[in-house]
Length: 157
Image (cartoon, rainbow, N blue to C red; front, top):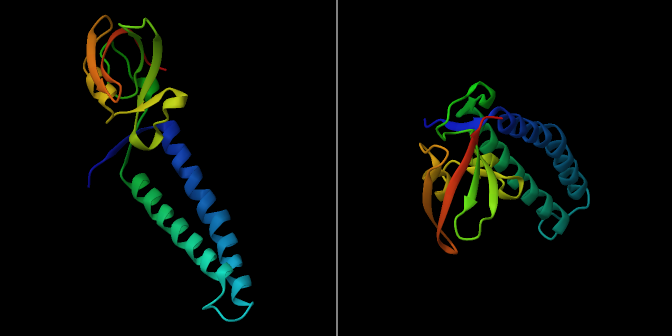
């Protein structure tokens, strides 16, 4: 069973979603199915079929969350240090063509969110950064073509 690296915050977010789906969504959907059943003929009951579809999607997500949490390898970023980029590092880069600065934290796949400045450990940019130090230049093939970046800082937050 392959471990899934994630930060403590990412692990907590998955646990919270699992709790919400098990304790709030599951009973709500069961209630909706019961109400739809009370309306009679199930073969032509759109409410019943919609509720059953919701139940299927919710139970699938619960199973996925349970699997991820069971395989989670929680890495406490606050205990990491050093000047080499690895999982959990917060890296500030400058685009060598546009001089635009961006800061990214390298996190697990399930907690990545580019708009919040978190990129997946398996993303092309993160893979190019791993093992490098501040001052190094990297080249990454992106959907917009090859881009060159210089690593300005490596921090552990």
